Length: 204
Image 1 (spheres, one colour):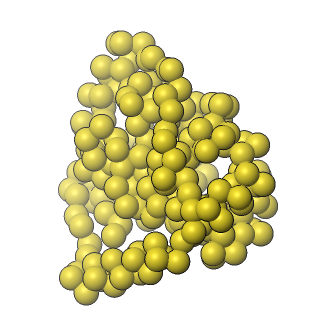
Image 2 (cartoon, one colour):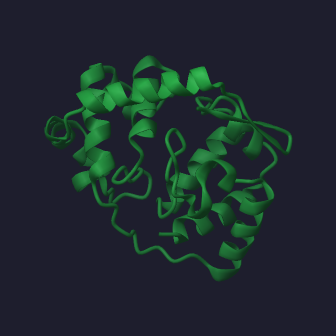
């Protein structure tokens, strides 16, 4: 289920019927996903940018290892269907079948995330945590930014990638978020974004 922000009020728009349908759909996806097939596909089309087992070595490419199955599935579908655009990812995702997407999501979600070794500036990390608490980041991403379901794990993600996504949400270059991140990021300054990126990248 997708959470919505209205100002500072956090509202979960769902019903039991919707929740049950979502759980059923997710269970069906998991039942059909094949991590071994995902590993083969990842080696062919993903490893060059996202690194071995999804542990990217390049700060502009996100780490996929240990990401949630649901988030990975949704993002790959969004790239494939044009709701999210990127000059590298969009043409790659365009050729993926629904089965490929499920298999890749299953494979990457099972991989062990490795530390990037990043250590943030202590003052910026402290300011980033304060801003995170102020704008209620843990309400969606959970404590420690561990992520859940459709909400990505961003703890220990590359700082450059985090900062770019925040800027893209703020400028509405990226909009596949049901308005959640746009609402949060629209009032962030460049300094706020740098501090948040330092704080989140410093977590593991």
